Length: 158
Image (cartoon, rainbow, N blue to C red; front, side, top):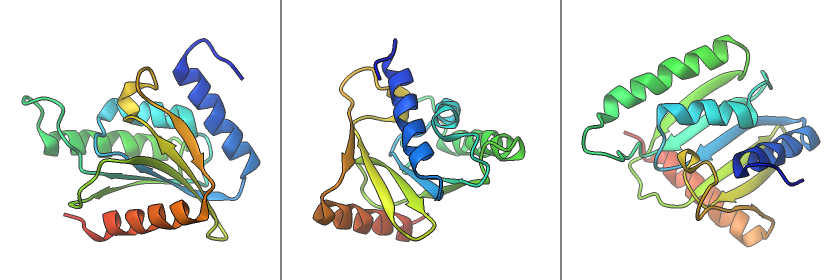
């Protein structure tokens, strides 16, 4: 489906994935740069499925010298509380990883531990405008490597 904007296209693509995979229990967003406004974008992509937990795995890297990482994390938690309270998600959780991080993925975890892995070529805040891609990973070896990356990121928390 073609859309007027890349963001609309991404939203329709993710909605199709969720429509086809109603047993999705959790969506993990791996992105080193997460800012408060990203939560509204992610809610437009994945919100409205009150049975889904949204997990944000990030280094919460700063994009400008004026930013305070801890303040940003508090704003994210406040917004997430509102999204859960209003039924957009079952829960929103955060993992602040200390592991090196560059690649970005959305992992759709199903109840039976199957998963759909999407490689994302840019941070959420880029709104899929430039130098981004959306690629479903179907190669079993790459799936295994990304699953290892996920567990490495979630083991090394601060």
